[in-house]
Image (cartoon, rainbow, N blue to C red):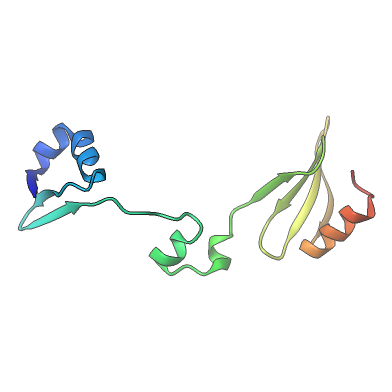
Length: 113
């Protein structure tokens, strides 16, 4: 294992990160401890759940916007709340508010296209 002080590691950090990504043993001395640099696999789909114990509901809290047509968009406000909005010259117009099934039914009806 190559051990480095924090100062020495900082001077050429990209070199030591590249070495660690090639599975070479690299450690940085921090006080009485040696902190190993290791390559890890991260899956974005479940990272927050595995690392932080987040529930699927907590992970899906961001706004998701999906284009449905030239000026029509769907926005996910939460897992249960979705709305359709239309981009007009005067601004955004909220055309429909409902859950996933409501939006799906509305789009199938052909009323908004």
